[in-house]
Length: 97
Image (cartoon, rainbow, N blue to C red):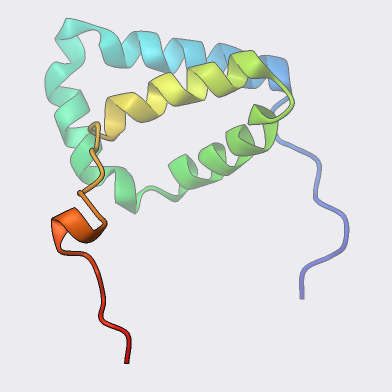
């Protein structure tokens, strides 16, 4: 059963900013392109990434710089997505029964 109080964060907001900035810089370096491809393939298997992402998410609402850095990091891993068309023109209407 989960406790009512959250455990203390492993990183402070300032430390999270530094880590995010360093990770973005490293991932953006041309010499790390092959490693980035491997990281994208393996990211779903790394619990450390998930724990870090959860911690960063908790700081996003408190600090706009962390929110911005987090968005940049997500953009490196997640390709831009467009929403599929919806509505009557796209054939998305459902007949009432």
